[in-house]
Every structure is written in C-alpha cells, then in structure tokens.
Length: 232
Image 1 (cartoon, helix red, strand yellow):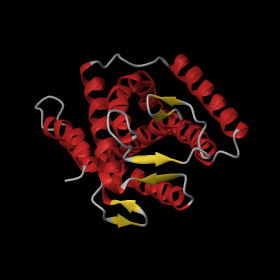
Image 2: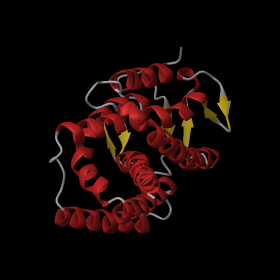
Image 3: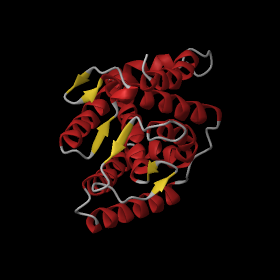
C-alpha cells in the first residue's frame, strides 16, 4: 500500500466512522454532501490534470500505486474525495457543537472584501507564475459566489477555517516532504512564489481554502433547493 493512500485512509477513517454519531448524524447529509464533493472534484481534478500536463507539479512514483489516469496517480483522485469529506465533517461538527462560532454579517463582509482584493492583487502581480496567478484568481471567484448564494456558510467558514488548517499542515506537510525522505509531489519552482511554510508552498493555503469551501457552499445550495421543492 502506498504512503499516499495510507495518508488518505487515516485522514478519512475517523470522520467517516464518526459520521454515524447519534447527535451529529452527518450521514443524513450525504445525499447533498457527496454530490457536492463530486462536483468539486470534477472541477479541481480538471485543474490538476491541466497543471500536470503544463508541468507545474510532478508526482513521485515512489509514494503512489503507479496507477495513472491522465498523468494523475489514482491516489490524487481519491484525495479530492477524502480530504473535502474529512474537512466537511470537522466543519459540521464545530458548527453543531458551537453554533455561535461564526463571524457576524459586518465582519463577514469586511473579511470577504479584503480577501478578494488581496487575492486579485497578488494574482495580477504574478502573471508569470502559473499556479500563483490561477490560484489567487480562482479564490475570489469561489468566495464571492459563496458569499452571494450561501452567506451563512461563509460566516461559519471564515471562523472555522483556521481550525481546518491544523490537519492541513499535517497532511499537506507530509505530502510536500515534511518528515519524509522525498515529497509525494513536487512543485515547479517557476510556477510558484517560492515562499514556504515548512515544506508547503504558501499558495496551498489558499488553494485549500477554495477546495474546502466549494463543497460546503454547494451542499447548502442543494439542501435549500430540496427544502423548497419539498414545500411546494
């Protein structure tokens, strides 16, 4: 079994088992959450494939199964299911146990505006760095759409995201080479700023922000739509 797959299994095992916890009952949300994750997966896997062909990053065959689909190892596809699900579990667990742990509307608006402006500035200042440019261009699009359609989700997400960074630094740290002999995947230095936290490119913090927010916003939209249909 590859190291990459082991990391994904460990990341998913706890959240999946606790999804049946009698109070949270996350499994009842699966009919909304799973389609949201799959839709997000389609978008980000497409991005991943394009950037792999553009040689923005490379996968280390030492740590994966060796099964590749469009230059992506099998584990990379599973990453876009396991990690969003595990983080969605954490998000809903915090929201359930601490329902007041969110930003008010004023600070949600201010912080959203600041993130959008800063992201766009960084993106436009680094047109030559493919990953940096696209990453900081995609983030404000996802955040603005989420703010417009699912403001309640954004209120919680902006407050909870720092908590989600704890497992991010552990998992992404290992994948990018922290604590192991070689990285599970490498970044082309010509595609990124070159600023790292441990072994993690700073861009990944914002990529992760977009990746995790997307299924949460979509899940909320699917839930609201289902309730409206039910009430007709």
